Image (cartoon, rainbow over all chains, first blue to last red; front, side, top):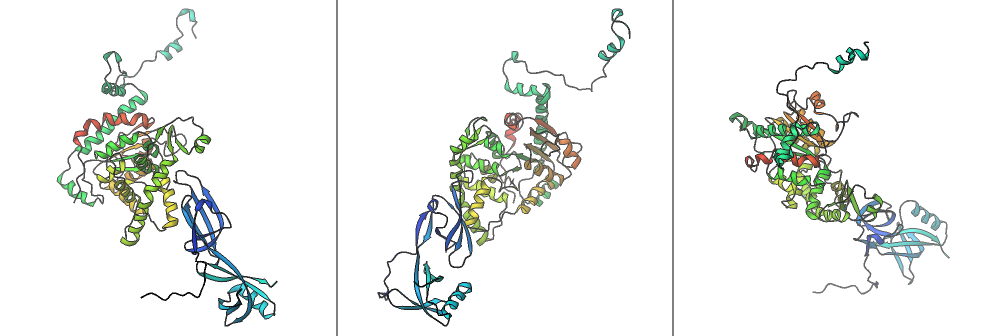
Length: 153
Length: 368
């Protein structure tokens, strides 16, 4: 018995990550560390020596939680790079702690939470002040969060 | 003073022609090897005892090691046999426990083959070395070390990816091969620690590596086969440590218990009937063995072979007599220090001692 296949959503079908050789990574790029999508803030290479193959030492910040992660990888090995999509949506309203956003196609999505902390307060503040704002939403590895706020053009 | 014309000045004569006291009975006369008798290498080495300076020290070291071996081969009394059950290592008890310590550069050199011979034939009981002393032996099973020159320039060597140890050369590639070989073993070790409750210590790790290399050219292959413990409390201070460090990013949590190993080495000394120390080099390998022997009020026999001097107060340069003051060597012992590079001297020492008694040594029988 075939499982129900959902044909309603269209997606380019790109996987959430793609492999990239460690030595090709760059500072300010992105990489998956300990299963989390991270922005690379420090990267140093130790050349082949008595510790064996050349290695890359990476320090990254989780793009969603801000937590720091470290890893060391031989420079010839591949590491996963997250596919990151960033979309801006117009903020319609805030209901029960969820953002009501207008997508490009004219649909409304209400599945994104009002983020906690300063950003959330900023969004709320601007909304309550009646300003027209756009919320930047970052999407990576099947997680989506509002990460920034912009004034509408 | 009388004038020169009337005979020699009395003061000068008295000084130069001072009558000598008799030398102690049994003093050896100095005599070197006479090549006119033809080339007899054994006789040549035996002639060192009366040749003077470090040659004489060499001859004395041969005698001291032969005393160690004689004590080792003496059968134990019945009572002594049962006491040996207290030894956690479960090696077959013998009349003398011999501690062999060596610095890692000696394993990089061809002395590795001499040490392998001793370990293969169960002629020594405890090994102490530093991290390099372990990894260089394993790496040689994967790829060779080469003879180079002391004068090769560091900058050019680095650019060519070649590491220099004195006048020996180890290509980086050898360490890459070592890394590829070691990583799966480290994975296994962490798995056994986490799932089977295995408690690792440096000696257990070295035994495991000796088992995994499974190559009769390796010192540590024979060490684990003959149940000869290898102590290396600073096991992380080398390529092994680098590998463990990088591995810990992928699979953290490996623990090496140096306290357990401390108990192991000290009890080897405590439960021994007699002990002998053969220490090549200085630093950790020298002190760790001496200190273990402190636990039994001193080793009965000791031979040091190193090039260090005592004037800076270092332990490496300290003569055996300094160890006597600490209780690390017995007061009635006749220890010998040979001021020489072990690469020159150790094979000759072994040739005049262990090799001569080779037939008396058998493989260690596992103690039940």
